[in-house]
Length: 91
Picture 1: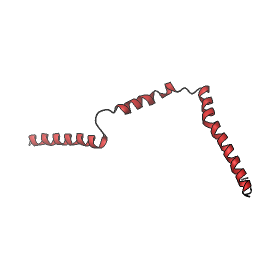
Picture 2: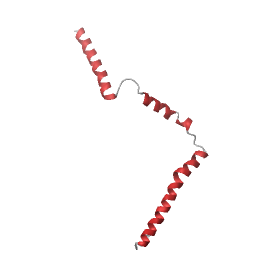
Picture 3: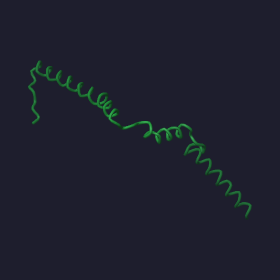
């Protein structure tokens, strides 16, 4: 009786390990995930949120798209006027 119980436990343990490998990935650590976790954890040391950062963020992230929007809307208004479409006032 005891011998068969031990065999069942061993088989169940082996099946559980196989299921973990099959459905949850390998049981060894993934070095890429570990490297990413370390990189993400150290990000506050690498990125400094100071005046220079926000100046460059405005210069390269906000201002060019604002200029693009102004130019594109001006072209759209000119095209609408040339095609006889009246300007709509959204007030």
